[in-house]
Image 1 (cartoon, one colour):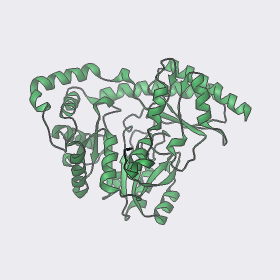
Image 2: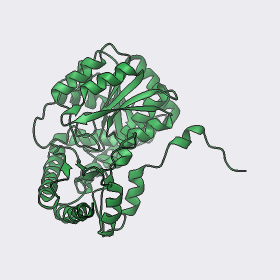
Image 3: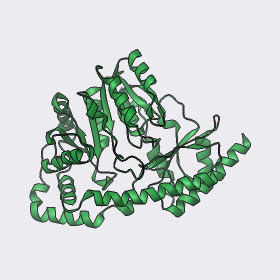
Image 4: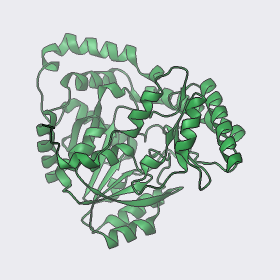
Amino acid sequence: MPVKFADRMSTVHRSFIREILKVTEDASIISFAGGLPNPELFPVADLEAAAVKVMRESGPQSMQYSTTEGFQPLRQYIADRYMEKKGIKVDADEILITSGSQQCLDLLGKVFLNAGDNVVIERPGYLGAIQSFSVFESNFLTVGLEEDGPDLAELERVLDENEAKMFYAVTNFQNPSGLTYSAAKRQGVADILKGRDVLFVEDDPYGELRFMGDFEKPVVRGYLEENGILLGSFSKVAAPGFRLGWMVCGGEMRDKLIIAKQASDLHTSTFAQRVMHQYVTDNPLDNHIEKIRERYGNQRAAMVQAIEEYFPAEAKVTRPEGGMFLWVTLPEGMSSMDLFDEAIKNKVAFVPGRPFYVDGSGENTFRLNFSNSDEEHIVEGIKRLGAGIKDFLSKA
């Protein structure tokens, strides 16, 4: 007899990006596909020293079960950093340490979403959130992105015409588009949400990876008196393999999220939390982030310059001031899926844009990652890709 799966699994598919990464395991392929930090920048020696110190000074404690909320000194560090960098007061008790920010999305779904609930997301939207919320049989409503953030008129119309449970947004260097909300758009989002029973989830894994432009961008949660949750992560500024993220939330929301996490995994790795805290205690995180900014800034510049040289003018490309991604829009009628198949033959890979659109659009878009390739491979890969685009255009 065949195994019977839960009904919810019929609408959830494998991660498209994870499947593409299998194709790019061939070392000869120049890959702009994965959303991967540059491994050359992982602070391996400093984390090793931190791990040794943790084992020597608190070995048994680091191996023991711990509280669901997370290691208190690490939560206090995160809270202090919010005040230092963003000017917002966050209490350590408002922080819940999670197993990567992806777990935040899973917990949010468990606590807030019933089957059929409406979730507002950006168009295009973050694939990890689409996959996670799909497990809970959500109905997605989308709001288009302009150069400086969401179309506020569309957001207001969507919320006026539908009963939405949540608005999920990546406000800094959005994945996949690379776009960032302006201060005016952040205030506008908050103004639209005030007075509505809609939870605003502000995901910010890339915010500290700004290498040009205005470094001071307000947190939308700071404008909201309630119904705001902020997500963060050490994955992009330290080491993704540690799987350390967090949520900033308070009151009853926090209590319910703690219960959901207890049911999921009891708590995030005690050892990983203590090692990360030891690392940031012994090594100023800003010094390491500055190294990342410099490297990514150079890699972004190399990709933009190569695009200007090798892409046809018909291909429109975002110009983010930080983060890890560029977003390409081809002329209407062109298929990035077809282009991907040809690009792989030429040993270069990217992520076609359609999976980032829950409405089936985005056929003519694709995402490029610049953080995980050196400048020489970036130039060569963009040259190959540009030739492929020009060839497609000539056949249109």
